[in-house]
Image (tube, rainbow, N blue to C red; front, side, top):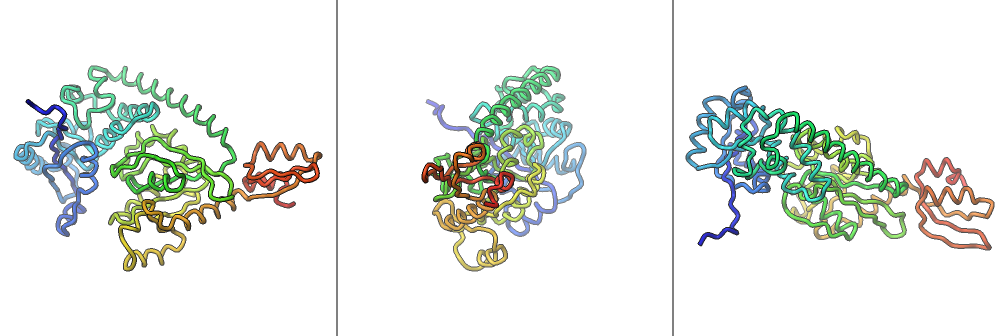
Length: 420
């Protein structure tokens, strides 16, 4: 009797083009390390790889026609079900490769979108992913829609593909308009929630996917956000109200991880989720110091932040997972070269006290803590403090109210509280 509970992994061949792939092969490095992890996250088993050193893109197959024939032979030899390009292909290139190879062909953006569809749990995340997928599929309607059929199924076919098999361009555009309106309503609802917490200092965790942001959120806030060594485990922003000692409360948000060549439509669709990044007073840029590509990953994150209009937002570089690299050598050199960064292990707690202190210093600079005694004649000013500030402690003195509170520095200055 067949075991129907056993998970079947699609067999995938990975394709890369460019000098970096051939150089990695020469040096013994795995040029497809990230793409392998993406494929594994999506549920594929990599059974072969193919590299073309040249950078000249073929309009027909992306890779050259000779290399495409070599790819066809490899696909047949390893009995692959699919081919994944570590690049974005045009609709024509996808169609031409599928015709030649007789297997499913997915490009990098399609694979990332598929993983997002796999990870989406909440209504907001599912809506955002479906919108991005439909925008991705729209120019690809020249392909045979049987490739999106649930009968074939598998990686690259999750999400809208399974319910939009016979749909035409007009209906997809209608669906895109509908989803866009749904997201606008969700964003308005979230804006109401954010307004109710106005005045609180906002800290957002950002970083390359799988850098340890969720683990750090748990360590700093006591939250229990699920953590897994998989890409894009967090799609919905998770926000917790935290307080370090006697300091004012602040909002700490975990956000979706970034990755190189993140599909533009995905960034646009996740606008409401990424608003936590845009609204932040402080960004904690979490970097996996154990990853040999951390410098390149950090550049990718900075580029995405610039695209979001947050290039000037104050940030702290947080090098995570130092427990896995130990002391001495390169890590000591890195610490000396980056005196303003913080080196931690979110897993073991090493370095977290120093990180908290640094966050508090930034918070108090932006939201100073003030203790002031209010007489009955100060009732208008007192009402403004209650409305705009964060109350830390309340006491009385001979009929007067003594408040310890925090306010954004510009607001406190405007109310004349910094001069008293």
